Image (cartoon, rainbow, N blue to C red):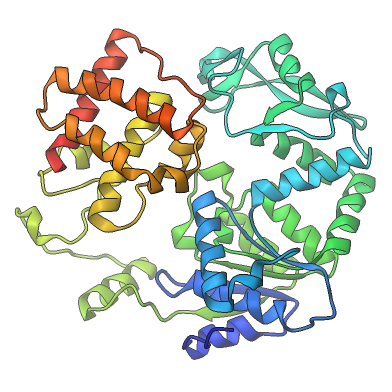
Length: 436
């Protein structure tokens, strides 16, 4: 087993606590994931006679991958040998639903017990971008113990299916998205007799859960945490309310303190930050967290800045050429996703880490992020075609992207977009040339 890495006294106290319900309150840059990985091993090797699994949980595939890598780095590759796992919360939802279907606790249309779970309805029959003004969308519901559908008012724009026929054809084919999985699990947890089945399953299979970045949790995620804690499963939640992705999956950070108080979690602060090194940075961070005003130095020379922030991604892309934004923003279609992978190649080359939304872009195109990065030279060749910074070069890049996606194994086809939309894509691609 690798040598134990040095921890601060706060990190050590949090990672090694014997509390069955622990809330680790970690400041930005204080090593949340380090503490999560340490705690995983502490519990994992504490009682070797208990053969139930330890679950390390996070909310995005990239965060799950980072957490798994930290666990292996700290405790060795065997730390995540079966049955121990690092999962996203969405994967755990799917696992619970599959258990309920196999046990016939509930039934799916067409009597499916194995489902194809998509990230989005985009590209599927009947799916379209629907705004609040477009009335109703279909959602999955439980009628008794049978999965069905219902129409509800649209409260936020997204890709949805409005027609009952199309929606139920997908369900009957055993096809849904993570949204429908969450809807059914939420319905299950509202029913006492069904909730008990989930509690029995978790108790039988799971010794402990460790939830990293808990302030990204939505109401369903927190209800599962509550269920695990009430079932006497060792439950650790780790997070910083200042770093919550408030729009992500319907995050409800304001509910975390309520969970901690009502379920009797013991709190462990981890306050020493490794992110802020200079006295000025430390002082600014302390003022910000104390809700006190901050005055920053003003400069007209962007080259004096190590990091540049803006309210919108567009503001960064229209800034000086020395600024490399980490994203174009929301991925509205598969062409957006393909261009995001080009940007990821660029960001990886400059900074050694992924562009924002890169993993989501790969998923939208039906690709594995690790494969995309392993074959990065293919995307690098596409970037080379953009060097002339002309419309012709951008058009050639679109053609080259299609070919690269096929080589990488994407089942998706980049459709030719309407004229206005394609013009926007060409502009975005030309922007890549500025920093390439």
